[in-house]
Amino acid sequence: KAVPSGDTVVLTKPGPAKTGPPQEIRLTLASVRAPLARPGGAGEGAGPVEEPYAFAAREFLRKELIGKMVAFQFEYKVAQLNRQFASVFVDDKSVSIGLVKAGLAKVRRPNNEREDRSSEYDALCEAEDDAVAHKRGLHGDASGGGDDP
Image (cartoon, rainbow, N blue to C red):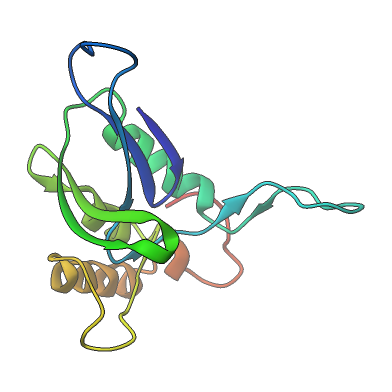
């Protein structure tokens, strides 16, 4: 239904709702951190703040997901953030791995062995290594910062 950021999606249950609006679920991609885009704050000259590739990451997910049947696997929940983290798939292909491999997001490394992580964690790390080796997106030269993956 929607892609509010480069690592968060809102999915709706297919088919008509029996009563009321369709069921929605908001999921953050597990073990992935995309560049931030947030509205501006208060004060003079405080416009929107968008990290490089934030728009490209959001567009990548939008093109991959909107209007398509998707599957997801819950991975973990962080109660303090009130967020559910999941792996999301289109045609049995991981959207997270594609996003990281394109250089539009980074793998979130756990702080310790007990911290939750995606069941795809090893594959995500391999995808990130590939993006770094090929200097894709976020891993390009420092002068980059454009939105071309």
